[in-house]
Structure formats: C-alpha cells, structure tokens
Amino acid sequence: MRPELMLFDVGNTSVKVSFATREALLETYALPSDTRQTADGFGLALRGLVRHAGCEGVRLEACVACSVVPAMDAMLRDAAARWLDCPLFFAPGDITVPLENRYDSPAEVGADRITGAFAARRLFPDAPSIIVVDFGTALTLDCISGRAYLGGLIFPGPSTAMAALAGNTAKLPPVSLDIVETEPRPGRSTAVSIQHGLAFGFAALVEGLCAKLSRQMQGPVKIVSTGGYGKALARICPLLEENVPALVSDGLRILYSEKMQNKGA
Image 1 (tube, one colour):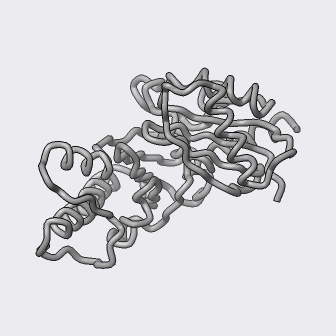
Image 2: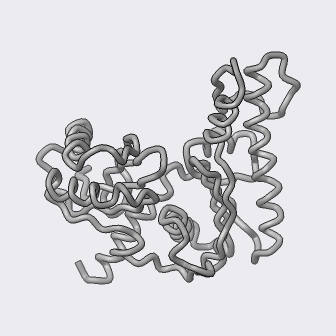
C-alpha cells in the first residue's frame, strides 16, 4: 500500500516514526530521541527508513508530529523540509485537537497525552468514558468522558523504575517484564524477584488507580493500554481490555485526515 504520511511521536526516550495512509498505519520504527543530533543527521536516518519501508520515490503528502521534547522540534521541521521535501504539522499547534481540555492550564498537557486521548475517543466512539494507560518513560493515566479530556495521573514508568533500581543498587541483573506467569510468586532468584515485583506491582497499581478513577466517571469505562510495556502487562492485568500499541500515531493520522476532510481535500 502506498504511504501518504510520515508520523512522528517524539518522546523522551525514542521517536516513533510511522508510515501511514489516511486510513491506516503501515510500518512503524523507533529512533533515539537525541537532542544533540543535527537536522541532516536525523534526515539521513529518515531516508534510511524510507528505503527500508520500500517507499523510495514515493512523494509523501505531509508529515505530522507531536512532541514532548521541544529541543527537537525545529530540527525535525528542518529535516522534513530538506530530506523529505514535505511540510510538517505539529499537533496541537498547527492542528487543533478537538477535545474539550479541562486542565487548569490546557497548554500544560503533554502533546502525546492529548493526542492519545483523542485517538482513543475516535477508535472507541461508543464508550461513555475511557481511561488511556500509557506505559512509556512515565506511566500516565488519562481520562476522557464524552468529548472532554478530564485530566489524569503521572507516575514513573516501568523502564524508569528499572533504571532507578539498577542505578542505585549494585549487582542487580537486567530483567524483562514479558513473563509467562499470570500470578505473582515468591521469587527464588534476584531476577525473578525483580521481574515479578515490577510486573505485578505495576499491574496492581494500574488496577487500583483505574478503579478509583472510574468511580468518578460516567460508566461503563473502557480501559485502553498503549506504550512499550502495554501488551506485556495486559496479559497479567485483565482490566486492560484493549491494547493499541501505536495509539498516539493513530491519533496523528486521524487528526490529519479529519483536517483535510474539513478542507474538502
């Protein structure tokens, strides 16, 4: 399928780069979020992704981005213009996110959080309320009722917790949260103790917070997970009934598609 868009979800750890049509995501890649790189360096990396995706010679219609790393924004815009010959639109900013934002200071909401909330609203239109649980550098829980973004919660994410544990404790082994067990058990090794502590600890945290938040929202409430550990933790946390790995990228795609439909293009 011929891509029309390149989408950028710029996070603190990585930049998720997706090729898409207006109707669907195609290929998704991850590049490091490095504020020291130049527009040319990033542009060359993007050209490499274009070749890998088999899109050499394809003229993209637009690039669409959301970013929580302001130091990368100008570099990204310059790279898109020079190396992709393509306009770049930021959401929110260049593209308005059509949700009522009930934050006391709406501009404080991370672009990824409001875009993910919008995507969940569009993907699950029949749900009276939704909680989006994003397992990124930070664990965020964002609440949507009707067409309103209510706000949410922020907590250190699994990778941040693991890094903090490793950085402050000697001789701890690296672990994965992708486990086969569905219930925690007393660990008989340091690796299993850490693995089960983190995985089931975050599952219990999410279950408890979602239960308390749901009581304050119009029900029933759909719980949607996303982010790097969303799929792994959904296995042991049945409350996470839907997993959308590239939720923010889907939001960028839908935002651009609706923008062009409203323009009649």
